[in-house]
Image (tube, rainbow, N blue to C red; front, side):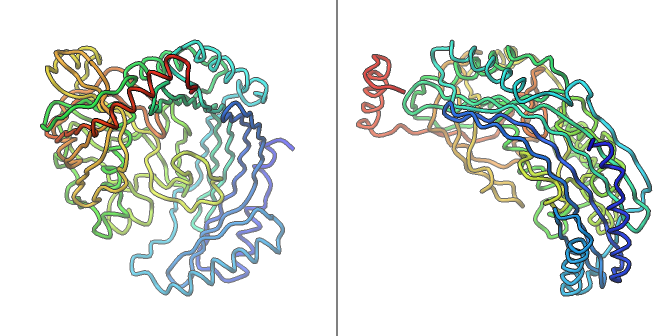
Length: 477
């Protein structure tokens, strides 16, 4: 059976009829079919995978509250039982004073299917990985540890009792490559890419990994404390921005877990040199659409424009609760897309982040720094205080001296707030790198405290000896 035929099956309408028979107040029915083919590699072990997941998810309203349930058994009996479970759960919650019901935006068709890649085979996916892997094995200072290449196609339909009947279709090839630097202890380097054509530039992946690996190989230890100029790499910026994105999430604002309120819309909260865009139709995005997973029309929008807050990320419920314009950010995806959308109740997330602002080439940004750091990677961002935005986190950094990146430093601590980090950003790079749901630049900022301490002398001697034995081939990586 073809995917397009499956989208016409009337199981969704039958589910609506069953819900009416059961006496629900309102219901949203989500039909999902996700087809995937993937090659994953770990320690030279190849794991092929083919999946075809088809199911229904329900958000049922009863007694002015809602609850969620799903099933992969599309029989009428199972559909009825699954709706009953959600209905009873909604009743048990009791009335929600902010109950808003479901959207009523009518029918929207969103189709971003690339016919060129729909029939790509496991063999072709493996060829992409092997071509990349062969080139990486020629680079002496790195050790490829795995990755994968996958094809995913989503075919979804959202119908509710308020007149929404929308279809979403899309597909993409996803490439992820992971390597370690050949040293003790090693550093981790990765590159992620998406494509909607078979013409994939594996050379770009290899060049990017080689460049990053060269920067972080041969870590030194220094004693340092100060507030220098700091550049955040795309990877580090992606990680740090999770703090800010949580702060402009309507669900967090509603419960007081954010420094912002809806009255901050239009106010300058970040550096005027920075604009952040959420673009659901961007061609390099993981999933392109013009409607969200509740049926709300989705479009390109500024989250921050020249430093001013323009959008609070929301779903329909929180838009009504805060009395703001729906931003169409109800998404049925996990951050890395490793769960089937049928299993996920809509949650608030950006579609795909892009950046605008004062730009320079990365090499020119380096030239502006006499003594500073390039932050390559950070850890523990999830432990930051969501309200104040305060963080104290370890990082992998590269020392910048007299306009040039000199050597990597492993034992670095960063202290500050996400507000200071973003308010003092003065330039971003012209270079971009796709990571997760966004395409990130390098970003230079100030007023972040950087500190570093040396390990005990005995430990440093042991590491030097281990790396000498590794270079001599006496111990193997």
